[in-house]
Image 1 (cartoon, rainbow, N blue to C red):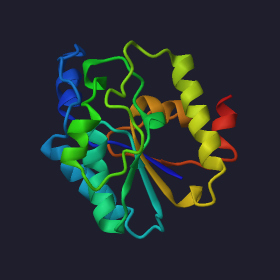
Image 2: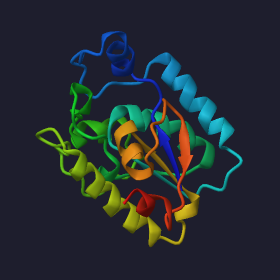
Image 3: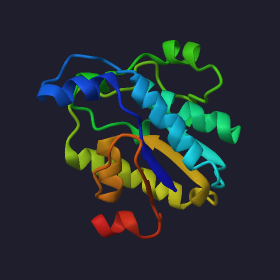
Image 4: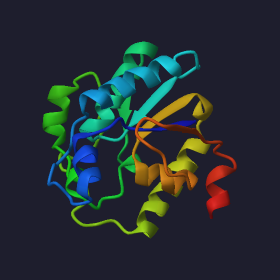
Length: 180
């Protein structure tokens, strides 16, 4: 399974400048973020990818788009791969709005308001990552799955802090349990 962090978002740029939450909800990608996503899709384009899973935030959906085009695959939305809820950018948009912007994506039974109402603890993020890990390890195509997610979730899954559009290959049978 490949875990990739979304491209640079408007929130990332403003937060990096002074480490103060700029109040941008569901931040979209910057032009650089779009370029990062396109470049990553091109770089990973030689791989056998049979499934794309994404968080429902705009920045991850925008990052997943070049992969979906390249591999000719739909994007399945999973709330398990959300960012750890802590900042304004972690307030999402209702599914009713997202389905208008991305009608080709599978939002499944995601409720209209899907993001948490309060800050998520590290323990809760680790538990959510553990649940996703177990679910993916049981899938026969887990090695051919691309997951478009966030810094906090990828950190919980792998123990690695990744930059925008950086990816990590995760072996479901070993890596997560090693973090224990």
